[in-house]
Image (tube, rainbow, N blue to C red):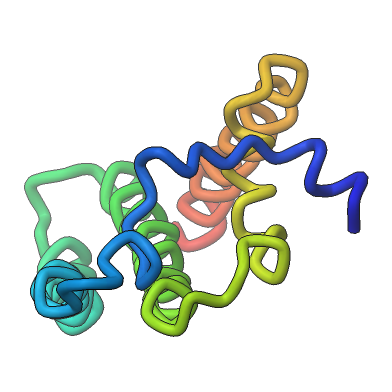
Length: 135
């Protein structure tokens, strides 16, 4: 676990959690409540977005599939925020949620950028192959 903590840089000066607002929890609750409401809206809007995009005939099928894939990946990120809400509100130490921070650290690391690029392009190629298969 200590090796993982060394890989992940956590900037605690910009953290908003229960320890940052020890005296006034209402500010924390307002910020988290607003972010949670927006996250719920994104998750509820995602199926409507996918339906509208797939029914649209203006955009080529590749573009539609890529938009739906990007929306799905974004929704997964939004869903993971609910666990972070819990950790922020309860004040669980960062060591217990290091795996969530590890993904952000990997994308920030230049040596891992090639892996992220290959993964992104793999999703794009899968979209093209799916398009050709469905013709």
